[in-house]
Image 1 (cartoon, helix red, strand yellow):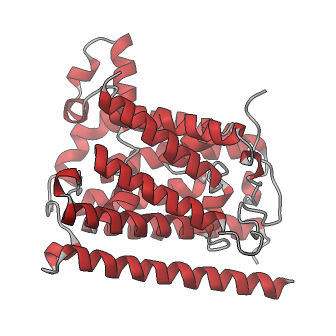
Image 2 (spheres, each protein chain N blue to C red; image 1 turned 120 degrees about the vertical axis):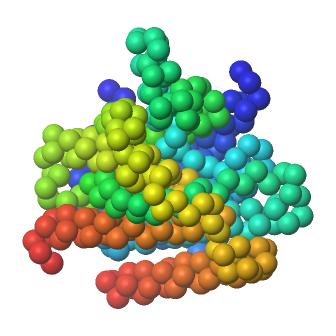
Length: 187
Length: 185
């Protein structure tokens, strides 16, 4: 079985292992690397942005089954139901994660604490699906997601990026705090 | 494969690899990050934004022909409401649209489910767009505003100052975390 289930542990054992003395911490190395990937993207085609690819891919696929679908939808006329830079970026991201997992050092990403509500496997799966629905719907309404509005928007000092970041963190912090509070008996 | 498609693929592989190594294939990193139980998510994000900020402004200043910037429009209602919905989804799923793909590629079941939910969300938005556009996207569209242009500040110095500020926040978060960890021992 390729897919593994999210392991549940009550201890905080996230990817932040204390690095050996003198070595750079992983968050600094990989955060810096993502920044450099951003510079590469800007220098070659356009700033990083992930969420546009989802409706483009959906439009492309549905159009294969129902010809004329893409042409009939105003949103797809606007963004194009095509396999371009955006969709290839998204394929590349899954591929890059797979490569990281298979290459030495990739299996070390540890499990993390989950809310008690999600301890049942089916509840956790449902939450991932519903949450996935909301992030894409919200991102397309806002015109970008964590990458387009924050990694790219804020990096370009775009006011839309700051507003999106503030709004997303407001409800995100509230929701996550409530969920994790219940996980720890109201602590 | 066209040139831009190939560039997209290469960029994606590098981006996905880095996100996976930073630990984002697991939903817990985002959940705990949003609840301020772990600062890894914030530290990675702010570091990446600071590096991108300096890089974007440097390119725009010294090699404008190589700076493919793309500032998004500030249509207040859509960005605000979309951001609020996005935050709830991110906390429930523990993923954003990019890290869900990293979860999928990293072989985590919940990453696959989040990607499937996201595809359905995208489909729903395509259908809802004609109804939403006149009420949330068209009104109060202030255009492609940036901080430095709005305040009439020079681009590169503003970007450098903001990046130093972000670096300061990262340094402070890291110290808080190191201290809290030392106290727990």
